[in-house]
Image (cartoon, rainbow over all chains, first blue to last red; front, side):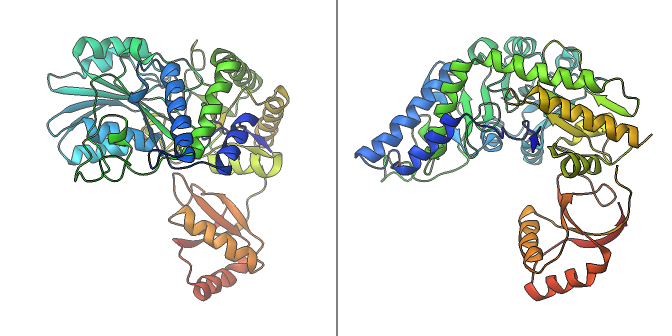
Length: 380
Length: 78
């Protein structure tokens, strides 16, 4: 199988990540639930991983790196925990349902929501974000990059806008963490939410929520933390107040190894290699009349994601053909980003998404180009 | 692209239902497979089971016998 669905999850993991998970499974205690070697070992791995993620995203303090189950949980904590009835919030038409559905839930609870549309290339215009700001605006909840189109938002400009107007910037970095450097402190991000299993190359089951100093969402969960057992509440400092229940120490051990890999290999190098493959793919098919490509493909900064359609064929049918006949794994349908499809008129057709990794090869890309060219020719 | 033919398509409300059906279908000797949900039936993230129409009765029997849950059974050209 040629795996071109890295925007869903990174299929290829560095061998050291697998080894770290295996080693952890051979003997890891429960962090904070004892003062014996096994428990302390888990606490040390978890803390080291917080330190590494804090350095990676320039959080400034490892205690403000919170572990969750996935990016969706991180976003729910940030959105539900920071917004209050009466607040106004701005988001974009590029968002994934992990952002939209919590926001719609908060709308039912009394927040006002403005969704900024995309332009013809699927880009967010800064002036549109600016125009949406009201006196009661509390936050912007935005994705760093569209999971469908690969378009990257101008985070520097959006960060400046939020700083100027005193808005909380809640960032969905699921598509960019580990691929594009993010300096949370410099950019003025209040809450950075991402998963550990995409470009961070860790195992599934670990999400990350990094908080700026002074940003403290109301916890969504209450429960055991291993501390202050006789208290009826969970009045604890970060990160414990947002981490009720046992953490996924085995997965976090894998994520620590992934952080080490990213540090050694280099995020910039990973980005360049993956983008080079994505660009090769685009160049290999862009002359085909029967192929519609979506997104701002000429942008200097984007993610290695290519969304396309073959004439008016159902994207599900095309993806199935690529999988069954050519052994190429892609993603079809709506990609949990409904407003992107409303914007491009592809609600019914969906889009076929091919997402590349530096672990892919030129041969993989050429096989995908060949497959698309064959399908295009067959449907003339 | 492969020529379109009449197919029996089973849809599910959840991935869990689809996985349960796949296990039962394989055990019972059905020849179909899971495919992405065709747009003729619905949009969005989803799985469907594609089977030759001749096996529709066998699929219905399987659901009855094993009490498995599903959304609908369609016959469409895809």
